[in-house]
Image (cartoon, rainbow over all chains, first blue to last red):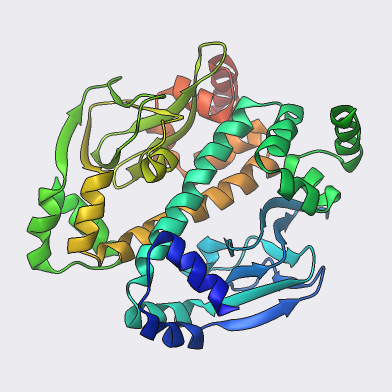
Length: 191
Length: 191
């Protein structure tokens, strides 16, 4: 649980050993079953999640009632509707477990308190979010640079484990494919 | 110059008055003429920029030699190739002034030193990058939710000043239009 977060913090910055207990007291450890919701679109979002084990998808409901996945999070990733989390507005996304998923969860109020007591965590979050934003910059480039089929090929090369792990109908949604089209280009690519 | 950055910091967190001088010593104030480059794709990127006045676009060179704009930055925004800035790798983007632009510039090494001396700035950068990432989450939703023409309409409603300000051929590139198509839907939308 908390050791995986401490290890992740250690990759970006550091935290004094005596502050670990303070940190721990602000997080709730939860397990979500496959298809269970961590966050529901339209509700206030006052929690963010660190994935200890498992995988979740971030999606919104399209006008035709289908769930459109726009992101995933695996181990050691933070996930939330961060605009809703930062401003207290209603969430524009839902988050659902794609497999049994263990998370560490902190509320917005909890985080404000924690950051007063352990301000050095800001250095960690600064680098985590700068990197997440940097990855978005690259994703916007990939989206404009490649056709959908080339995008899939890029993804297979860049994130082979991710492709294996994520349910194929969600991967299709994420890439903007129909599941049938994804199945077709997978066959083509494997042959 | 520095007062605009101090004011921006004040919107997210705070900095002690006696630290302002330290902060100032790490920033270089620069003016770029219209079409001048702040960063060139393929070079090491060891600077990030706070826009004091003006506007820049972030773009990469497509295989056909055209410049594909993927982002803009206006007053009070930070811009860089943040992956290259964080990791020291070569930049995947260029940044160019779309009008005369005044920036405050800090190097990666300078920032590391500054954050040791003024660690409370991490709280500011944490919130700035969380918000930038949050805006990316929403942009990914808009990109998948709307046709290109609807996207333009969304942009006009959400960012009317931005639409007025940015050169139309760059706006067209950003939205994935030809300049001709943008001109067509502008006429349609204005009539």
